[in-house]
View 1 (spheres, rainbow, N blue to C red):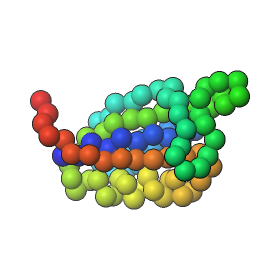
View 2: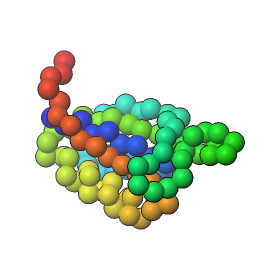
View 3: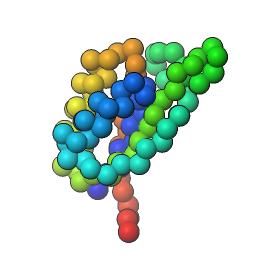
View 4: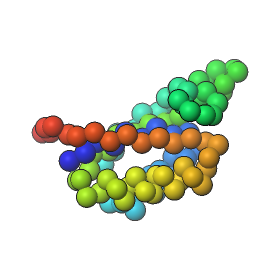
Length: 97
């Protein structure tokens, strides 16, 4: 099992959910109103007067075989929307209950 952490401009929320659905990744935990600044390019998303936009983020835990198809969909979503920003990170799930 793998955890995928996805952070994205909230304008992409429905498309990120569509990517999860298309990858048969049903479960997720949503974190709303996430602020931050990308490490490479793009404007900060801080929810302030100067930088009013915010991000969303979510965690999903999937079988190993679902990771690559989901990441490919997310990568294409980021390519199609270069000014919005989307990042995904994967790590191992050691245990679950």
